[in-house]
Image (cartoon, rainbow, N blue to C red; front, top):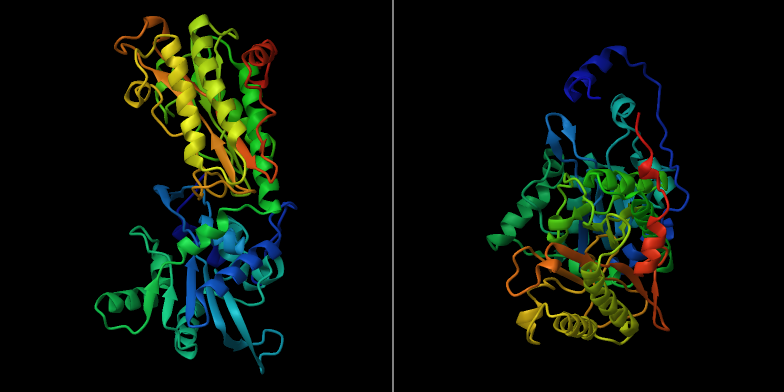
Length: 479
């Protein structure tokens, strides 16, 4: 509950707060990516930019939802990848040639560092209301930084790094228009430089480091794979509980509640994206997330819902019958989609082009729709009326993560063929109207082939029907 504005809170605390208190930062999770992982990524980026450059990477910032309520904070993907630091209004400065700073243990001496993390200062007044902050000491102790400073030191140290290093290039991501006032203040010296660069008054070339970081993120480390597998396992269990809970008369949002309960119950911090639960006519809407319709007997339910665990998002979809038994038309469409998915997954191994995997799915869907008479001729335009999206995408720090045209070991991709037949589709038997089927799994490319990380949730129709004969947590009344 929001009792009063932040300004009023701070004004009040100025009178009631007792000095000498300090809220120390506590990390409760023990399975975060190790600090060595993030350090190795910073080392790689520093090597990529070279000694004649410096880099600045900034965190995400809090955004207002309404009034004085912010959206739940989530860190920028690249900043998290490089730092593991979860707070807003932070900056990372990389100086490959080294930067002279005061030794924290003996301030009469200086040391040379190649990286500095700038963070919000410790502030017991704010922390009592808004949560603990790491502060520079916590960032060094808990996040493995050899040197960290409060963010008010950034301007001076950035200018020192720029001129003492003789940098010819500054690597910094493009600045969005909706920067918070805090970030605008922190980045003011860089914004001035960018303006000078546009006017050709700067000797320093401005470049974007994002493509370099993206290239590192394509191949997942064993530690990343473990976290992505955890997110996917949670997602699979949530799908199972939703299938067990589903019954005619429920509302789509009740199934959404089952998914999100399981996420939290199993430790996931967020949904990876807004949960899609579409029954009947809503099953054909790809990114439907209103989730307000009542589910009826005979409906097919398409649920595209997945968890995000420690900043890594899964992406899993299951399609199931509301009453626990697929009708004959539903079975025919489902079988086509499942065959396409199985044929595509079977092709996935190092060295295979993703476009060839996609082409295999297209071929199976085209053949299947032609066989049952949904399309009258075999051509791309015919089957693309009903298979209207690509086969899949990489997953990782972003649900639509970065990838490459040719598969390599330790890449993670979704495989999600789908067929969607709207009511009134020309030339189609009405028995197929409002049947949308998508089956999506997270597939890890391995040296030997591939592994389905979401295999804990069934895809075969007989297995789904057997699972739906059981009762799930969503069937319990709320009193």
